[in-house]
Image (cartoon, rainbow over the protein chains, first blue to last red):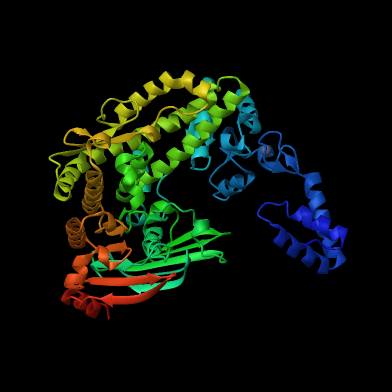
Length: 198
Length: 395
Ligand SMILES: [Zn+2]
């Protein structure tokens, strides 16, 4: 059903283009916004515009930032010889939360996915190579443990090989705090394969 | 494992069906289209994550509904109550609960209640295309080894991506970029080597079991064999490393042809099995009757293999197979499977199992009639003492 208001229709149309939001949900959001005070809606609109005007990609690590370089890349407390490669800005947050990592990041912007037409050119691979050329001691590949993440890890490892730097990948195995008896065999079997000397 | 109760809603033409099942043989009768097979499909959805008929979930939902749910309750061989619940919703997809705990993926459910299925479509295993035999192979090993199922799912994903890459290169008219293709080569080879090695081990253990089972149910067969035919390798190899080497060799061998055709031309998705009777290929050497009995032998062997590998006695689902057997053989297969484990059997009518009419239902047997998506009658044989004891222990 189409609404008789063209401006309402326009909002629904825009909202329904957002990920995970169908037309029904878009209608509900639009009608909700319609009932809100004018200032509230104006603040939302301003926040949206402000976000797109002020944020951009950090020219060093490709993370989303308002300053260039981003605060992490600017920090003098970070180890600049260490670069952790992740898929998305949200992964930077996840690693930062550990408070254990003091190096820099590189946000790829996804993983290689031929089925969706994503190759190295669609990702920030060239930028990573450039950083390595400018002097980095170690690259940690911290991509998601699925098929595409693993293949991208292999690809990057091959691309970085000529630079003769240390290239590592995060370990996959048994989550800490879980008892062995409750872990499925497949995970245990992979953890055994990836065992390390103590 | 044996089941106590099977219940489901909005599955095919069933609105809400619930049955207390017998510990031994459960015979479900009904005419075609009334919904008798749906009871077996419900069990299969719970234990194997999908119907053995191969109908997509969206088409399993009863007309006018958006979701179905299935629940099976049973008791493990060690006397522990087990429960599997599956819910499918057109929008939210499928979720499964194993004893009340959400299962992360299919691999967590498959194998927890091992299940052997024999349905009319499975004739293709002995006389159809290689894909049918691979499906058989994957289903058995996946239930016995969780790691196998995970590797298999990853293998399929890698294969799909690698094919996409090769097809893209073909369209562009240039050979695929080697550095871009290499990770997918490695991903494919690694997983194929693992799958092929597991298949080798499986066949080594399975062959004697199959030979024995086939001889017991089939007539006019002096010898039955089953062999693993790994893709482009003349004989099964002894280790994962050997398979890895052979696969890398093959990978380089077909590289040019792969760019020309734009698709993967080697790997575990091209394997096959060779079944033989009296030393000849089953596809030419076996009579129609022998095909049927060999298939039953294969499924009985699958039961024995799973029983030895899993911690649970498998469930047995026999969909519409007795109509094609002569009465003596039908009785033999019925009695044999009944002594192995809990069976769920569909038949158009009890006339197909005349011995049951003659001797009546015994302890641990039940018979259900299904009409237009509902149970229309239930008969139980007497409850055996062991069943009584179990019930008493429960309460
Ligand atoms: Zn930065």
